[in-house]
Amino acid sequence: MSATPVKTRFAPSPTGLLHLGNLRTALFSALLARREGGIFLLRIEDTDAARSRDEHVVDIMEDLRWLGLHWQEGPEVGGPHGPYVQSERAGIYGEDYQRLETAGLAYPCFCSEASLKLSRKAQLAAGQPPRYPGTCSHLSPDEVQARLAQGLKPTLRFRVPAGRQLRFEDLVRGEQRFDTDTIGDFVIRRSDGTPAFFFSNAVDDAMMGVTHVLRGEDHLANTPRQMLILEALGLPVPSYGHISLILGEDGGPLSKRLGALSLRELRARGYLPRAVLNHLARLGHHFEADGLMDLDALARGFDTARLGRAPARHDPVQLDHWQHLAVLALSEAELEDWLGESLEDVVPEGAREAFLKVLRDNIRFPSEARDWARRLFGRPPEVDAPGRDAMELAGRRFFTAALAALDPAPADFRELAQRVGEATGAKGRHLFMPLRAALTGLSHGPEMRDLWPLLGPERVAERFTAARDSLPH
Ligand code: GLU
Image: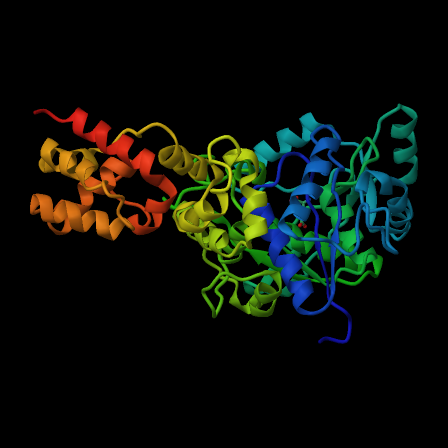
């Protein structure tokens, strides 16, 4: 363990629901802290008042807890560096702004949006990257006073030092270099007095003792500006790691269809926390082991050196693979809990345990469990196309024989199949497929010998009768 205890953070802006991208950032941050026995901190970045919503804050916290990503410092938990909601920290930055201004490292800027836009346009037209042209960077105190007296509301701009090379070692992307001459003076306080996002973000990280910042690569361009701010304030700079994007399986940006799904939607579909965790943990991170892991095991296997620089691809089939394993890993009580009421009115009294035991391997979602329950315990089900073909090939006489084979009651499915085989001469799949199709409506599924006791003699007879009657003489 390093000398300073590791502290990571997740700093969502509550402008919407958590989706795979920001959840993965939260997960990696939580895993890093967990591996090091450190602290995982949650900070709500709601400085964009127009887009932030209290209900999103509630949902974000609920989603993180549902995944088991508990924070040791943050809203509702507390800690020595609160408040952890930025809108409640407004007064905290005043002193920093003052210090920067006094030291000449920041200055009020009265430029209007319209004039800034014009200058950007002109620079672009001249083939230059758009930067603040420095219009207000050398106003005299009198000039500033005169503008304030006119009632103009200035922003506060950070004065970027000229001619410096900034470098830092990104935890994911290796050495990064920036030339300060390419960075224009930037706004750190808006004209309404609220802090610019990357100002409060950087200052809070430093004040809260965050040692490692893992975040999306879309923030990479903010990093040099944040380093300059922290340096000017004499605050410590954390280690940064910029995680590559998640792309859809087609290589394009994650669309809603392909997984830019909110966790809410995944939860509603019945995905289990452990499936989501195992899926996310492997998007852009390579683990030695490929089995289903709990948070502790994921944390032990997590290493920033194993984070990939190339964009990660989200493949929904992979998510379903983890879901399958997660269902198999549920205890009986958890399985009961998860399926909740979805089986209530469809599985007969007393058959629930046996049903779950047999079907668990074939169920990935509660809706599938309900489907199977209806299939086994309801009216004779519709038969799928391959099943129907098998039944037609077997013919009506096959099912007449199957009905006859029920008396006296066979001990098990094997005995039933043996009798039907002897009576009809059918063998192998020509024997088993029509039986399965008639009994379950499907050409695939769990072993028939396991399903047989669930069906019981009456439903078996009913289904063979229905099969026989559906076939021509
Ligand atoms: N509030 C920012 C976001 O949600 C946080 C960026 C960061 O992690 O530094 O994008």
